Amino acid sequence: MGVQGSFSRYARHLVIPEIGAQGQDRLRRSSVVVIGAGGLGSPVLQYLAAAGVGTIGVVDDDVVAESNLQRQVIHRTDQIGRPKVETAAAYLRALNPDVTVRPVASRLTSMNAVEVLRPYDVIVDGSDNFPTRYLLSDAGVLLRKPVVYGSVYRFEGQVSVFDARRGPCYRCLYQTPPPPEMAPDCGDAGVLGVLPGLVGTIQAAETLKLLLGVGEPLIGRLLLVDGLAMEMRELRFKKDPACPVCSASPSITTLVDHEAFCATSQRQEDAAMVREMTVEELKERMDRQAPPSILDVREVDEHEFVNIGGTVIPVGELPERWKELDPSKEWVVYCRSGVRSANAVRFLQQQGFNDVKNLRGGILAWARTIDPTKPTY
Amino acid sequence: MAVNVTVRFFAVAREWMGTASVELSIPDGSTTEAVWDLLVQREPKFSTWRDRLRLAVNNDYVSAPVALRTGDEVAVIPPVSGG
Image 1 (cartoon, chains in turn orange, blue):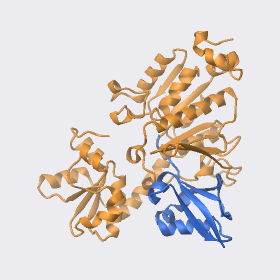
Image 2 (cartoon, chains in turn red, orange):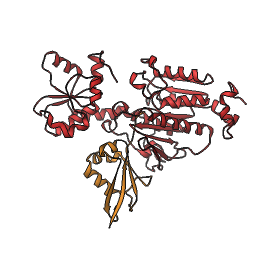
Image 3 (spheres, rainbow over the protein chains, first blue to last red):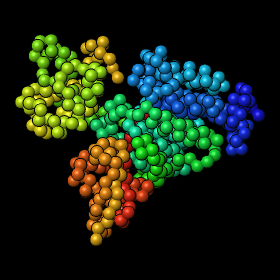
């Protein structure tokens, strides 16, 4: 058989009848592309490389940040600031030199998705945002490839396999992406560090099963992982006969970037409802000693880590505590990236605050353009 | 006669409700629509985001309203994006 490298590396696979030398050779001739070298991507990449999957593509346009290290175990402290695909590739090559690693340091878009994904047998979704998840599911349908889906939120995770040839796709579950304020990213929502580990290792197992053609893949089944109760439940779902992508008469037949039109419509909606102040405007107001009242709606721990002053009332406590604030004053509300504070601004407007603005981009924008000495997270 | 069902909340829906599950009593012959109506009364966000959430009855995702019987379990499952 054509198993390269030492026989002993894969000895525990070779003794399993469902794998054996033939299965191991199949893995060596297989290719998988993993989108996102983050919390989910880390364990997926580690286990696929360890298993001897011959070619592994890694797609991520981000660099390693300190706040990643609590869960993204493929990266190290001494690699902060380096492109994630580079540090992941170095890890995988050191782990298993049999594997060919192809790093792609760009963001997946409707323009490059077909070119990036087409060479691979299986697509693994380890992304951290809805636009990419919809793009991957749609691309899987169009390219007739399985997508191994995983996502996490705080103490919970979801895993499934979308293969439109044999079952439903992501749009059969959720037809269109939710608006940003319903769906904060990991940075805003938080996640128990090990949760993507639990979910990512299940994704790796599903990927290996697909490549080997063994077992029952999670097609038409969504595994819900509840880390607090430590329960897993399986929810069954069917192909939507009206699915815009994978039904017999699809309305979406080419790839679309949801970010483009979601973000735009969201921005228009926000502009109509939520007035904004830029970090430059706020700095200028502070400099001429005429700052507005400032409200930080992040958690107390976040405020203590980094802040630009102001009153602290976490957004979750605002319904009980907004009366501590004077509605006749001019207010600027901030959070980490501007999502939570936009919700807070809407809420305060409903309570009769007439002059309340959202700090666009939050404290991240402040650290980026006004004061780079401020730590980010 | 009333129908008693358990409603379980996941992800952001759990945050909205501040609890993982509630027991609801709905009139005999009710469907999942009656569950939605009670949820909206308790938390207006369920109204705003209704078409973005999915329900599963006894672990089967449902699209159209489904008749409920005592002992049924309804799960409210929002989409999740973190990675």
